[in-house]
Length: 463
Image 1 (tube, rainbow, N blue to C red):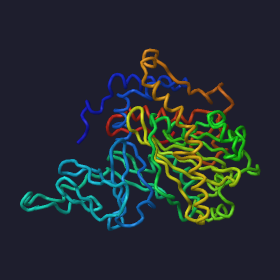
Image 2 (cartoon, rainbow, N blue to C red; image 1 turned 45 degrees about the horizontal axis):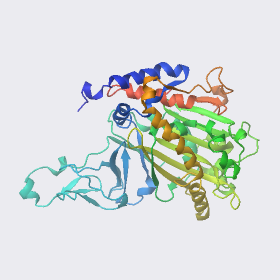
Image 3 (cartoon, rainbow, N blue to C red; image 1 turned 90 degrees about the vertical axis):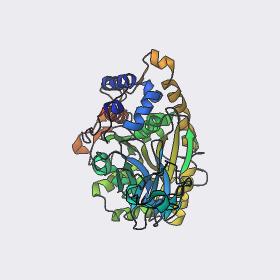
Image 4 (cartoon, helix red, strand yellow; image 1 turned 180 degrees about the horizontal axis):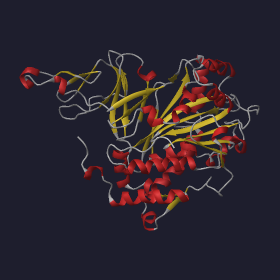
């Protein structure tokens, strides 16, 4: 059933804020209120999370038939299961009888899910298989018409499982656009793929989900101030000024990323995001292109965000500079919305399958000490986001029409310059150096387009 005009229309206040984004972005301005307005948030749940491709899990988390994990799209729970035929399913966690949550564990292995209220029982693929006293209670009612609701589409990319609630959404690779080239570069380095190391960490922060997505789209400017202490303890091996040398890339509308890397092929520094040389030697056997392999070889840091809330980070880190040299860390996370001023961060550490057990342990420990609930970077990053959400919901921000400055890297502002497409092997709009905020402007431009789109309509996915 298609939404009615009343369901799809934005409120006057939300429409006004989207108009402000459209008018302000050419001048590098964004209204602060989008980070705290309750009406905006309710519209986001439908217009953004109800339509976009959202990251759910990695296939390594449900490796065996019957394995499942419980995840979120927006604020709603979904069971990501591998059924008895090995197929991946994304099932709305609500019994068809009375809407009761049927999955009460974050993960496990089960051939069936049983509702605790009336005992309706479903197989791992969501089919209704029975209920107590079925013939007396329901007679000839068709079980086939009463299975669990399923996500409209489910696809996997390098083992990364995405789902969308919108049947009209384009295929995942089309949605990713140019970002697929860069995901290939990170997740395709090992011909055998990647796997999740341990269960995801989960912690709640009083912030807006867009602050995390904004930061991982390529906010490198904060590294020398907010994370100054990290450099002082030797957790990261590249000086701040040198680390700012690299590329900002608007890979495709909505999806942005940043590389810290050597400008020239023969410059010294960490290669392949700091992963051990013996592991990096195996990357030459991967299926990615020679151009992708060379970009990865020169890279110190990769940070990016797949719209709306799936972020990736690869870089050399150590939790203890006095006793352990930095090593490559690959982490992914989602910024799960829990209201206009709260998120639950889901943080995963990823290992390449060709890593030795010792290398997996070292990268996991280095990640825990830096990008985790108790990590040095995490405690730095989340604190400023608290007041972004607070001020975004303030009366003053509304009455003063308070907007935020996203002008860095615009013509005449700063030292960043656009790179000729012939001088960069990958897709997208590319800028050198990382003193630049076009990556965030790209995110908010797509965000406003999605918020204003009518049901069934989609923005362009290529520039």
